[in-house]
Length: 469
Image (cartoon, rainbow, N blue to C red; front, side, top):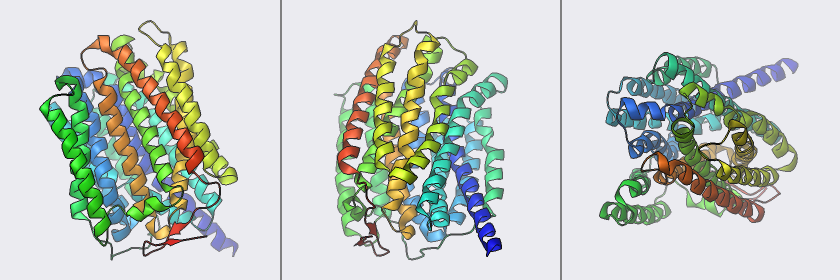
């Protein structure tokens, strides 16, 4: 019995390591690219809207394909889908490193988003399957999973700055090739999850989701250079609205929707999704502006900017681990509530920064913002996975992460529009974005207070109906 128990513990530990590694690779690319934005604007002659597309092409494709990726993970098996995602991410990273123009880089980043989409839902499905017998173990595993991403996010700016200084911006993409190979070798030792071969891809829903998010993001990005009254901007918003309404109608009618609308009738599910949107929108939007602020306004080098970002990212690790412990003892509500309020205070402190601010003045918000996110994100993820049956974990995690990535893409688009027009717009744009972020997180705390239950929520059974614990 002891040998069996030891073997099971080893299997669970290996699954956590392998699943966390892939998620870390996905997150590494976010912070590395942000540090490289000023260099890309020079080497590839990219404007601010062009830089927004370099970031958002990845986030947008990642977001719109996550729902289908969750289905594919359930259909093919999480392990197989995860391996395909690592291979695709490596090939797309090579294409990013070889890009000769901003357009080529944007296209390669979009393909990179496809690989990323096939990594996140299967990684969570692998974790959920391995730890489903123990709720506290699952909470700790998710805390470690998000902590691994925190380590990656923390290392990204420093590694990116060093690579930019030594080998140029192309190296920030080529570094993914050996990392993906390591991830594939580790995953080969992980046990497969149950497959759901009866799952079918919802092509109509997928195309409408792509249309809705792409039109919305494009319209927001083009507000800066074209103005909000421009026909292309207004047309983009109109198409996004029409596509969204059509998408909801389609998902309510098809037998196997990519987005089961019944999920949103479950306690905890909708509030957790809204919380995730607010967190990603504020964080990724501000990181985009801060990259320009540190290097254009404060005149930091790429390496100095990477080091400056360290407390903004490294605090995730400790906060993620604390969150896993808090969820195991108190449930998801408390860490989500505290996380939103701490993050809101951190964003508000950014409004005190200007062109002459010292790094010491930046330190408090750079610590508080990730502390809040680090507390809230694992709790939010645990709330989502606990609300559905194990067989639906891939699809449920895809819904959450699609919403989060969409929020991040909109954040970059919206906040980036505030700094379009030259360096003189960066500081006032940062202040406006900080106030908006603080207000959104205060609103998120209200949603958590009234929307997240303290007791275990009902779950969805394998047919999509609701059951109760």
